[in-house]
Image (cartoon, rainbow, N blue to C red; front, top):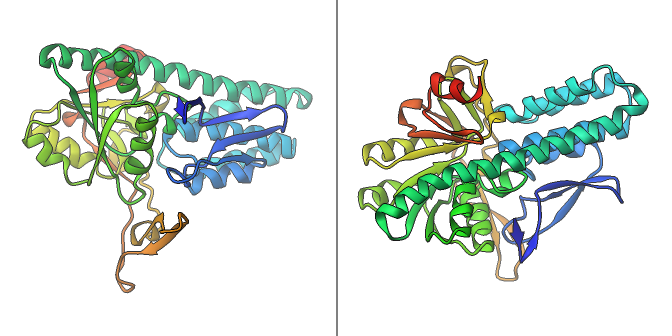
Length: 358
């Protein structure tokens, strides 16, 4: 997608410098900075501090992390340890482990002199696959937006939470992909973008990328969605997911569950957009999903621009106050209208997912 009219992806391998390049998302929307990842530690750190974020992009970064490990030290023990460290960098998003496991399986039995070539090709393949998956998610989700527009004959108002946009994937996004396709087809859409505390990914990233594509959007406080639904000002919700269980339960950014409850109470369709790499076929209960708890300073402090245009971090809580910063919550399948995948739309259930993927 575009930034200031130029096409970008969120991650790519630069042949000339032999480095992995990323858009540093901790600096958006105030600064656009392309950063080099030169070592596997760089990749791990980028994931941990959220220079890259979003389940599909984390997976792509982890794949390139294996490439960087091989470039750094083509030694089986080092590569194995690197793969373990990558998996541990953020525990909730299943794409991370899926990507590393796929890379390691591909490299099994490969001669040392071929290892880098095979790894690089596989990392590129993972990223290209994600682009295609996300594009197809958009085409499938477009049908829902078209149906609403054909009935309403007016702007379709869509609420989304966090950033499941192209900045969270390699391109297109998951939740935003249907929106981008609708916009390209000439369907008038307007997006309510939850600011998504504490890191404000909705305000800083979703609104930013929608602006760059010329799509109307309005940032709202996280607790505003309910009253907008009561007023009939939300036609549908679309969110992403960091891990979806085989029974249709959805693990996504903290606050998603509350949006689903509001949507259910107000009879607003609530859709979840995901590539199949985000499905966890093994965990049976949402209670077994590892929920990441991040540094409380993400709650107690906030970044912004000062009057001179410099990014500053300021404290907004009393110094003596404690804060709990859980990064994700679980939305039970019963509150999900449907899952929008690269293979089609299905109900949020074991039967629904298995009909598409088994």
